[in-house]
Image (tube, rainbow over all chains, first blue to last red; front, side, top):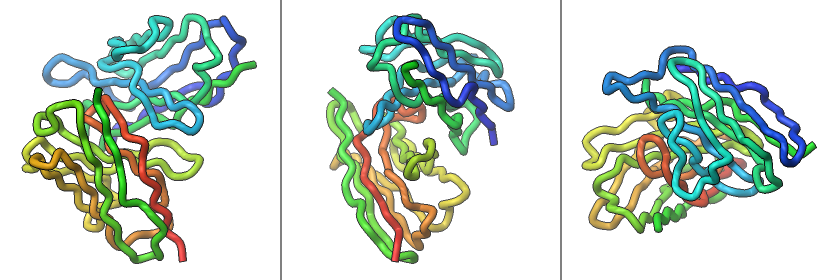
Length: 113
Length: 115
């Protein structure tokens, strides 16, 4: 199984400041079709998860452009350019390349400092 | 607008069974893989199972193999998860999600396994 490792697990950030979350996979996430199926999800308190980014760097519809994804192979990053209060929650990476099983990272809890 | 509405959760004793349902709308259900993902209280996300568009392929996480069965009815735009032989560790919010890469999620249905 592919293990997804996120860091940090807790991320206190001042409003208006940038934030960055790392996700490392135990093997390359490049699929045979050339795509890399690495996704990022946000889960606000009391809400269902919501996908923010798919295939490493593509923002889903309605996702603010302050969110960006990057990376390749086994190392990926989610960046928030300027954190807003509504960004509080837990962020998960997920790989959809080598499955079953589909696997998620442990989650990174973002809070306002 | 994509909508996924899960129902069927509840409180069941260890060894019990439930049938979870997910009603889909706002997209062509029959053209998407569909997934179930769960989240134990205070814990992270765990993929449970998924099913191909025509139901010909089904995959499960090892911990539920032989106990859970995923199915779908494309005529009814519905996804199901039959959960049998429930254990305390199956206590979780169960979400249905669209696609292999979980593009959209429902609000979840809570399964609590306790005597």
